[in-house]
Length: 257
Image 1: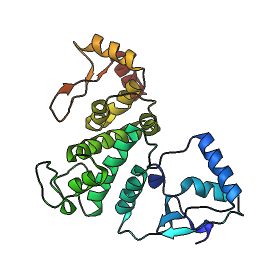
Image 2 (image 1 turned 30 degrees about the vertical axis):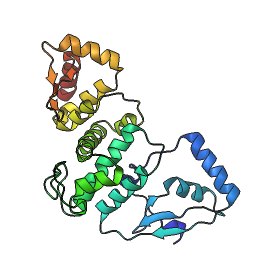
Image 3 (image 1 turned 45 degrees about the horizontal axis):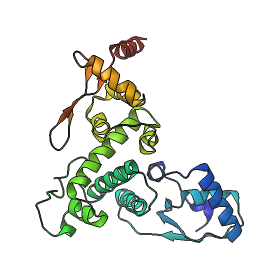
């Protein structure tokens, strides 16, 4: 396959951790020194699943030899699940990114066989006490593959949904959460997906503030916060995110304009 035939799907690319500038420079120097790619670029229907950075380097240096390995998958969701599983096999992932990729692999695997996002009972019932063959239970199978419990897989999906909701409300928030720039508890991230869409930009704006500032604001607004976003952990413990009245009034004023 020619380089010009390779395609980029933004959704696929967004699941792959970007290299730091220095890391990409080092990779580029190594490839130039070799004069070829040591590993093939993996594609599905011409779309790159693994090798986005190497693809950029190839476009800059036309003399570099490369190979493309086209794999067969049933649909786009299988491709997403493949990407997530492949990335989870790498060592240098942050805890936040591991949770996100695990949740996305689980969701995509369900969707690949006709399931519904956010519903682990649609295709396979996920119950830690259910010892049915793991190959027949999506949640159990993924848990076994990654050496975690099925409850961890379910929580990871909730976390991933929160991250995606944050990025939809405030573009760029996904990477801020996954690289640790936004420091928030898992339950705070999960709550974003449960909040009304019109409130999500404000919630992300609050989470972008230093945690110490958020804690002070929440403590001062506990008696009568203008916005309460409720969520529940698996143990049904409740928590709240308080949005300042000033922030809410400012938003309403903008809406009228």
